[in-house]
Amino acid sequence: MQYPIVIAVTVWLSGYVDSRKIRGISLAYRRFYKEKPSFLCIDGSKLIPFTQVNDDYCDCLDGSDEPGTAACSNGRFYCTNLGFRPYYIASSRVNDGVCDCCDTSDEYNSQTRCNNTCRKLGQKERAEVENQIRSMNEGLHLKRQLIKDGINMWQEKQNQLKDLKMASERLQRKLETQRKAKQKADTDKDTLTGLQRLKALAVPRNPQAAATSPLSVFQALDANGDGSLTAEEVQAGVAILEDKTRSLTHAEAIDLLGGFGQVGFSGFQETLLWDRLRTGDGLEVKDGPKMKPHEPDSEAAVEAAVQAAEDATADLKKVEDALEMMKLEIRDLEEALSADYGADKEFMYLQSQCLELTVYEYTYTLCPFNQVTQRNSQGEQTIVLGKWRSWDGPPGNEHSKMKFDRGEPCWQGPTRSTLVTLTCGTETVLRSVKEPSKCQYVMELQTPAACQPLTPRRSVHSEL
Image 1: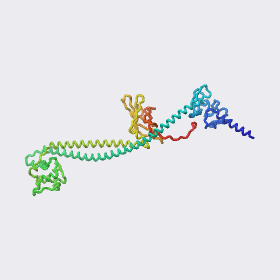
Image 2: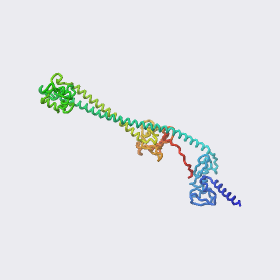
Image 3: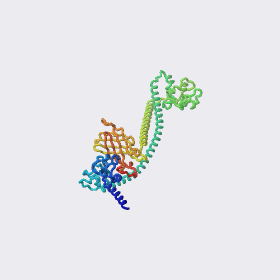
Image 4: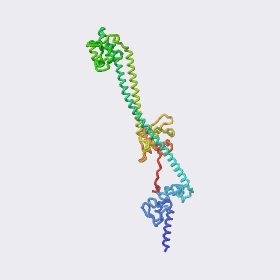
C-alpha cells in the first residue's frame, strides 16, 4: 500500500530536479519549467511538448522556451552569480566565447575557459557601498553644520536689512533737511545778487531822491548787511515821529513787515513799513551814527552767499548719493533673501561662492543663485552660459538640480543654458562640465548640502 506514495514522491522530485536543470532561469520562474508532458509559453501564446524546451530552436514568440540557448532573438539568460548580483543578459551572448556571467554559466557549452569572479566582484561592490555609506554619513554630518551656518547667515542678513532700512529712513529725513537748506542758500544768494544789481542800476538824479529810494532805506535799516531785514532791525532803526523816545514793540515791527519776522529787499517794498516811511506816515529812519545808512561789502557778501549755495548743493548731492547706494544694497539684500535655499537653509552658504573647473582650453565658473560663465584660456572672452532661474529637480527632490537660462545666444543656435545636478560629497567642488547638445550645458556640483539619509528599499526582482 506504500508503493503508490513512494512512486508519486519520486515522480514529483524528479520533476523538481529536472526543472532545476533548465539553464538560464531564475528561482521566481522555475515554476513554469517543472517537467510535464507539455510546456505553455509564458505569454500563453503556444503549447509545445516539454521536450522542445532548450532544444536550441525557438518555438515561443516571447522566447520563453529557450532560456538557456541563443535560439531566440528576444530571449534572456539569467546569470545566478552567487556572491554577486544576479542579472540578465541577451540570449544571443550564450556560448559566444565571451564570459558575460561572473559565474561562467553562460559559457556552459563553449571552448572558452572562464574563471568565476563573482566573489571578487561582490567584495569590491560591498566595499564601494561601504565607502558610499561612510561618505554619506560624513556628508550628513557636514550638512547639519551647514544648516546651522545657513540659519545664522539668514538671520544676519535679516538684521542687516532691518538696519539698512532704519538708516535709509534717517537719510531720507536728512535729505529733506538738506533740500530746505539748499533752498534757503539759493534764496539768500539770489537776494544778494539781486541787491547788487539793483545798486548798480540805482543812479539817483539828486541826493534827496537817493535818500528816499527803497534801496537806500533798506540798506540803512539792514544793520548787518546780510540782505534781509528783521523785526529787531526795524525796532532799532525806525523812530516814531509822535514820540521819538518810544521804540516800536516786537509785535508792531512784525506787523509793519507784513506779519513776517524777516523779509528780503523785494518783500520790503511790499510792506506797510516802506509805505509809511515813504509817505512819512508817523515813522522815519532814526538819525545818529548807529542809524547811518549802512554800506555793506556787497562783493564779499555775494561771494559768501554763492559759496554757501555751492556747499549746500554739494552736501545735498552727497546725501542723495548715499541714499541711492543704500537703496541698491537694500534691493540686493531683499533679492538674496527671496531665493529658495532649501527647507533648512542648507544651500545658503553657496550664495556667496563661485566654483571653477578647467576643461581643455576653457575655464567654467559656477556662481550658484547668480550665473554660469565660460572663459577661454587666454582670458580674452567671457561668455554667460546662463543666469539663475530656479530649482529644477523632480517632485519630492526639487533641490537636486539648478536651472540657469537666458545666457548669451549661440551663433545660429539657441540661447545658452545650463543644468546643474547636485550630488552628495564631503567637499564643495565642481566635478564635471559637458555639452551634450549645442549650447546646452550640464554640470555636476558636489556638496554636503545635497546629502540625504539612506532609506530602506524594498527588494525588487530584476526579472519583474
